[in-house]
Length: 85
Image (tube, rainbow, N blue to C red; front, side, top):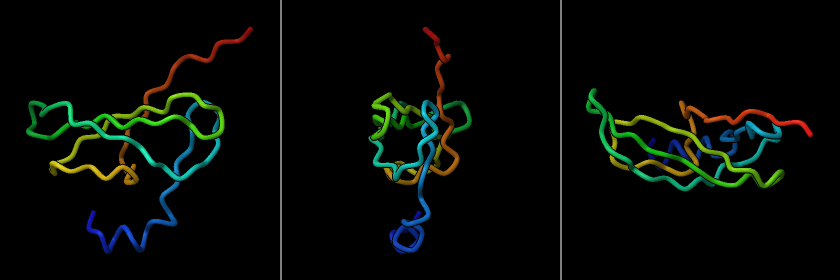
């Protein structure tokens, strides 16, 4: 995503917490973990949900070596089972 595209689309970049379903503006940390067999760079995205304080973690493949922390398009979120007391 180009900087200009980011500036235009920034207000549209919201995500939903997989734990509490609250929508928020992502400010995720990103970490390149390597390249897969298809030559794509694999990144892990993570942050704590500002509402429920549970971790939000996802994986994304990119051709680029730079992953913007607010660009969560095509992010595959990891979910955990819901436990009841």
